[in-house]
Image (cartoon, rainbow, N blue to C red; front, side, top):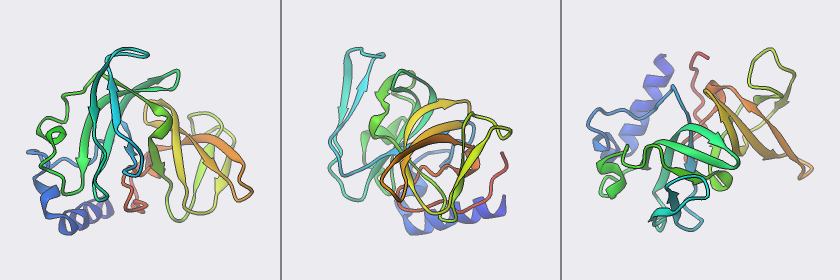
Length: 187
């Protein structure tokens, strides 16, 4: 727990505006799978429902800001939003005025990412620790495929450029594009 707190303090020191992002100063939502939307692709489109009407298009034009999202559930290539914020030091963005304004809305899952830790992680075949697994030995970025509880099914590319899918336990998920979150949290 001290490592989590130390990492959070480090993030706050790096980005002073980030500390003011939320009135509660809450950064992580550990009861949810969290992921991020890269800043080098187009706008983020928010939908009313799966295959529903687009209700907002969020620009993605800053090289220093990312969208970070906590996920309620997933279905058929879509992710349901619990909360959405713009990080770091992007407190002037209207999304950060109310991080729950898109709660229960949906986004397509294909561009959302989770970083795996620098020291590697286990990709389980099913979302439980008793399931068979493979070990990923180094840092990787995984595309979010599906979520079940706090488990995230991700797709990575191995050293032979072949796709691999597996389930990441919560402690191996990092929703910050600028770090690998090498901290210890309890699963």
